[in-house]
Length: 256
Ligand code: 13P
Image (cartoon, rainbow, N blue to C red; front, side):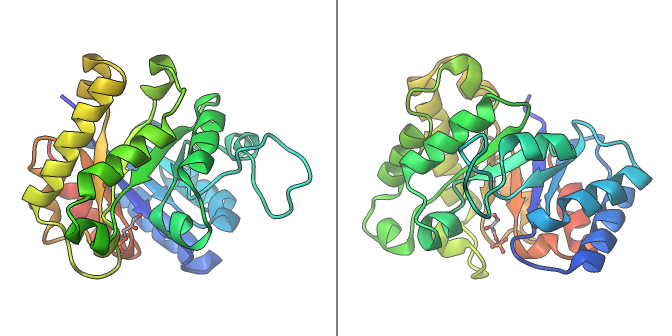
């Protein structure tokens, strides 16, 4: 049985004090007997958030901190970039890769996501690889082809021993920050297909164990329905992760 993972992606929001307050509230109140939780603050607040969380609970597999992005390079003249080793040094456990906002606004291609994934899989960090179609692509019936291309691109040339460490997230672009959620059935269809694809690209065991999160307007009132589907193994939450009370409700909605 796959344990659910609830990830909060704070994106470029909050100031330092708010980040510390939110992290403290979530870390002290989140019940994690039934699910793993990760919060992903802006990079500049990672250190403060780690310290705040450490003050109220042990950071471990069930509750950890993630980054929203990382460089594919180990070091060097790359102004503004942050390396895998720097995140490890801080005590970060997860990193989100290939978010649609980075694909769309920062021109991250499948090849870039592949390079970052290779860098991360060579480290202690766990990647959350995001895929998802735009509204036009869905309307043109291309959803499955698009997510298959993104997964194949991200994992290209990566062997099963490494790939098995990754988490996937299906985030339909049209559902992100729009209040339009994919129905549990729409999401399940894509999740089922992604799992099948991991089986084809790798093996049945990897397909059976990989966690596939759903993201896109997940709220306290739709989380349980989405996560009741057999291939939806948790949630990647944007807006609703910025309030402790709502995020805690989503954590509570995870399947035991
Ligand atoms: P929203 O939950 O705000 O739609 O954002 C989803 C998302 O992009 C998480 O990575």
